[in-house]
Amino acid sequence: MAKVLITGTSSGFGLLATKQLLAQGHTVVASMRDPEGRNSDIATELKGLGALIAHIDVTDENSVALGVASALEMAEGLDVLVNNAGLGVHGIQETFDTEDLKKVFDINVFGVHRMIRAVLPHFHANHSGLILNVSSILGRITVPFYGPYNATKWALEALTENYRTELSAFGIDVALIEPGGFPTDFIGRLIQPSDTDRLQHYGDMAQAPKASLESFEQALAANPAQNPQLVSDAIAAVIETPAGQRAFRTVVDKMGMGEPVEVYNDHLRQVTEGIYQAFGTDGMLKLNAKS
Image (tube, rainbow, N blue to C red; front, side):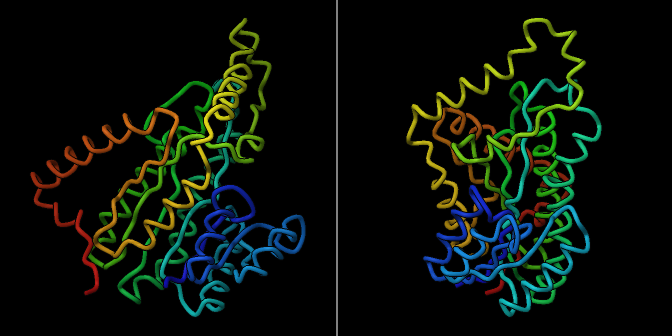
């Protein structure tokens, strides 16, 4: 059984994955913001299921350092870091100001980097560990009205690819989960743009984001197969797959985007392997797993 630290466990995929991993017998440190305040009910529920609770705000360096240290102490070590905490946006890209983008990048990209850097000394010492980053299908393709979110997830994909190659020789595994859109409270927490004055240039298109989101929510409601539990299942499956046998990317989607993205991912895999082979660095794509 693994010792797992998960960020963003107060709702959505993080909450589901925490419950599932606990039920499967893993030790789980569930991190969230304000576990003794606004998230106290969730924290109490997870404690009752056997979770260890850590306060971590991924946008705060000190909070990350203290939270990871607490997790290592409570769990007596860590085997897996699941970077699940994330923030979405919806609106016409021009209407998001720079501060809007900084906020999303601070959680979705810089927050992941903070968490990885905080955990890596422990993983290096053990010559093992799994970093599992929850990305998105929108980190592979773009669709209108998610521009800043697309940008963060594309950045996360690149960040993860580089960690994968630079850590493989040290026995540290890195993988991605790429969900499509699911009916969670993530949709209700989407950041709206700050500079709505810019909408004056868009005419009728100014109403397009609202109509698009409503249409997507209707499509979700009509497709019960798009169950958030699928993402929790995928997270658990990657964790329980032996080191050296894990897929780097796992797509989770039942809305019609998953299959073409999987084809795209496979093509990129072949291109990447060919380029690495040409430069004699293809060994960096293989995990030096402990026997």
